[in-house]
Length: 109
Image 1 (cartoon, rainbow, N blue to C red):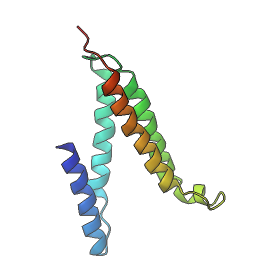
Image 2 (cartoon, rainbow, N blue to C red):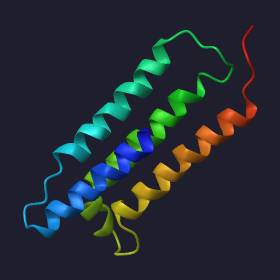
Image 3 (cartoon, rainbow, N blue to C red):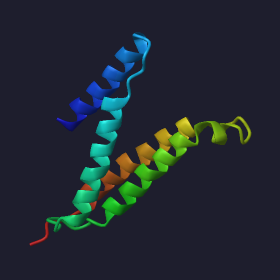
């Protein structure tokens, strides 16, 4: 379900770009929602081990947002890689960490 909403936010953004006004409100709302859900997950009592991995996932996500915000500044440091590219690598690392967490976790009895 969350994936559908995420994809829909990107499609809406793209559609608005094609109409000439690039409306990012839905996309931004989905981003804020994801951050709130991750933070809420840190506050709930865990049902599985490895709950502290959520802090690492939030860290990768925050790093991705920093890279996104500093896109041009990062690219100007040698014209080798952009912040946008690094954002995708940080987001991929967060995705990897989620899979790693799920693979290694155990049920808390």
